[in-house]
Length: 325
Length: 271
View (cartoon, helix red, strand yellow):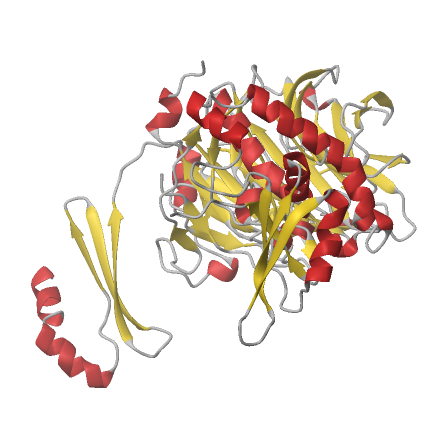
């Protein structure tokens, strides 16, 4: 296959996401401008200019009309996807680490870092009328998180719960209605870098710095499967059509300069969802992979790396013909 | 229109245009492919011609997707022409998925990981740091103690090696027992060759270096005829073969006088 290399960022990619139909690919990085691309040919549709700090996370809503980004400039911004304009900018007390729309797109959640004397907090806001009035509206729910800070976050089933992954490896489930913690598990031993739901939202895969990815039931937080690697895992995604997951990571960015790219293991690695066994690898990035996303049709996937590139890989026939022994 | 294009891109015109500036870019659509020719200056201010080929395909997509296909570009891409901009979108070289079976995986893990973890191995205490940084450097552990610790281990390995080792033809066994391959007058089986010695090496130093391994019959330090300096290698004939083995085991790779020694069995001369 000949991957498309998207070079729109000047610094390392922090997150990439497809929209629901998969025609657009969104990417954000430590530079100030999130980008949007047509996934088919890699053409850049535009950039969202307005943030003053590294953009840590983004999400697109169900109808691809709004995008939400969380940034180190201590704001959460809601954007008009199609014209790249800011609809609302919501100030926070510290940098915004994770942002997500609920499945319905009526609400959005974001979490802030524990920094500058502020606690880590989870906010839920109503985004049905996304305009400048949002910046001084009170959030629907505000949950102080006193344990370790949140490093990744997801909406649970039916928009009734929020799943948070923490820096110390804990995964917690919060009730959106009253902000109470329902459940918390401790299967990982180090920071949860990424969590991604499967297609129907019944399971999610975590990527942790403790060099493993795990599959959890999204209601009971029961750990179902473990995918072991030798390097910190930064992202993992579940194929929407096959029982495969793709795992990406590699040597810590800090230590990259002292290891060869071969030893650094910057490949995307494909594991069988059920047998937990690695069956394929794909090279490409020359730094660790920070974010992975499957195209909703399962026929291609994209990866964003510390090297600042987003690569869109369309699977060859050999991938679909491959039978797991 | 195609005719006009042809005239424009004839070589005669291109020569004329050389003095003016860059020829205009052209687009030709032919049986499902679009050919775009552009001219631009490269980094060395030389004119270059860029020919890009696009494949035109039709896809049936949902309405919303089709509508989004026609969105105007915005932000930093506002001034981009329709179609991918070569500054931001590139096609990278071919990559192939490597499918692995379980065995391959284990193997590759071993190969790749081990050197990474143990790049540095201390010659003094076998820890995973360079000998220079060894906390035992310069202490008794450095030379003699190390030997005491390791000597028994090495002899056992040698013994077991001869018991369980490869098949040795009977005539070779005889040679080993008799001491020295046929025709050689001296017993060379317990002789070792030490090389990569420094120039300032003397017999006394050599004696000092090898005496802790056991008694020896004979020592020879090669010296330059004119200068009298060491030529860099020496032979030591031990009384016992196991002492020689221990010496090889411990001294090979050992740092001495800022050089790393190379110690091996002395090989018989060829004639």
